[in-house]
Image (cartoon, rainbow, N blue to C red; front, side):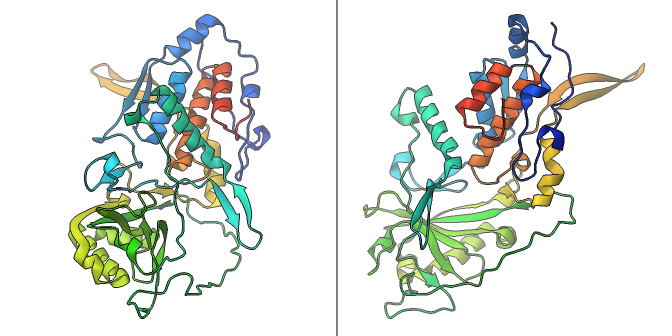
Length: 404
């Protein structure tokens, strides 16, 4: 049987699409399609182009390569791979620990609920940890290529609350244990959005390098965590490294991690002006020691200014998901038009599946990138009738939203 073009997998209420948790039966869509060995070989010989060498593009390559595809090509417009996964080295290399992750930087394993002390695992991030294990197996344990996860301190009990300029006798803002920060929370009713365009959020991060990790030598030392907060506009959250606690030598602080409106507005500042503003705020919060020990090295990443990304992640309402999710599973035919002396003509330019950020169901730095490329890879395999391969990828990577 020769493989021919088929309609895309139908994504309707009848096949199980649901805005808050989509499911569908891909095998039902392929009932009547019988593959033989020759068909499978021909399908895997197809030339596949993957546009973008971000995590989703690289993961798509991995999934298809694991499924037996060899004719794969990644096309990247930038000068590096990784996309929104980016680590900035302010000095040295990986083992000098003078870096800042300006994209994803933490992967939660569990959450503990206050009051009950109940700890619940966050299973979605297991995809990230599993991918690290697979990469280590592929690299056969070579230390220079190993993927290791550093235990991260999410909050320090001595994190600072710099609001309204209040300072203690030591000249520093009060710590979390000294300050009561209680907000008024209420349930928000979801209101349908009148916009038909996908909303995106963006982030600005500025890392500063200091001659020592002075924050670990305060009377009430701060060890790790992304929890120092301030009402100084445009600063957002301040993060301290969770690695090499109490080590000697220089240290890198994420002195500003701001998003949403400020993530866009402060991106318009000239870089050096923005860095100086953040340094001044760092001095205001941490004291003159920050001025004395700043050694002049910084790294700024405002994702709104990246011409190949322009945002950090999609931020749709449930109504946008309900509108767009049915199209996520469509395979688009590419038709090219050419003009000659004999007139215009159209030729088949192949097919295309979108696995970009807007096609995720949940939106975050890494997990959503892995999820959507698994979905896209499985979709491609199903389109080609490779059911067993689609099953294998689904089972390997815990793709729970698809039933095969």
